[in-house]
Length: 186
Image (cartoon, rainbow, N blue to C red; front, side, top):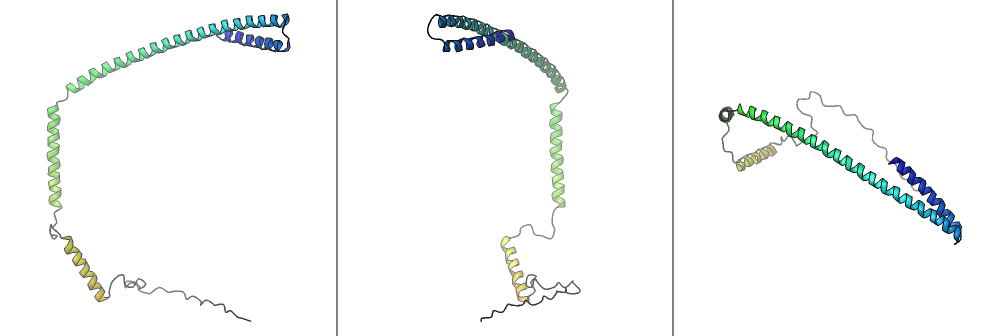
C-alpha cells in the first residue's frame, strides 16, 4: 500500500507540472500534446487509487475477520468460565439447607425481641409520669418566670454583675477622658 501511495504522489507531481505547462501554452498542437500526457498520467493515477482502495478494503476485511475470531475466542472462554461457575454454585447450594437458614433467622428475631424487652425494662422511669401534658409544662415554666421576676433574681437581670463564686471583682483600667476639641470663632 505504501508503494502505491508513493506512486500516486509522484503522479500528482507530474499532473501539477502538466497543469502549469498548459496554463502557459496557447491552444495548439503543443498544448494538445501536454494535455494528452496529463490525461494518461491521470488515468494511471486513477488506476493506482482504485488499487489502493481495493487493498484498503481487503485489509479492513482481514482485520474485521481477525477481530471476529478474537471475539469468538473470548466468548467461548466466557461461556466455559460460566459453566465452571455454574457447577460450583450448584455444588455449594447443594450444601445449604434453607430450613436451617430460616430457623436461624427466626431465632435471631426472637433474640432481638428479647433484647428489646430487656432494654425497655431497664429504661423504665419510676418518678416521671408516663403522660405529661405540654400545656401543664408550659404553665409551670411561665410560673417559674413570674416567680423569678418577683424575686428580682433572674440570671439574665444583670449581665455585668460579677458572679458570687468570684472572690475579687476584676480590676478595670480607668480610661483617660477624651479631650474635646473646642471650636473657636474669630
